[in-house]
Length: 183
Image (cartoon, rainbow, N blue to C red; front, side, top):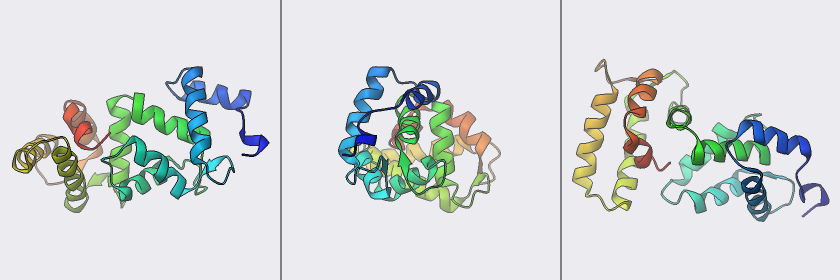
């Protein structure tokens, strides 16, 4: 590990304090773990390091979705995630509001960035939800019925498209949505 990566600067700590829900002790613990997964010691995660780090934290989350998460949290589009970006991401996933989590999930699945989840995009989300539900011990039939009813409820205007507002408003009323999406 290089000298530059062995401790956090005051400005980093300030930024993290303003942009996350973590205490100084929690930031210190996360930083130590970050250093373990930063295999090349350059002070940031490449895609492979990021996926490895999160595989441990989100075991039911498919690798393809972890790659999408990487893209969502690479705020400066540098193809790396530095510690500040990582702590903001962890804060949203771990301690963020349901709305914050739903926004991130919507952005991950809205591949064409149309502001609407189309059938193909919803189907991808449903596959993940079924897998998580089964891993939680639910029967595939029960979980499928639940998911169908949940998406009927979310799609308020019944046009088979889910807008960002529908997803955020109705999703916030259904905590099981986040559970089934592995977050």
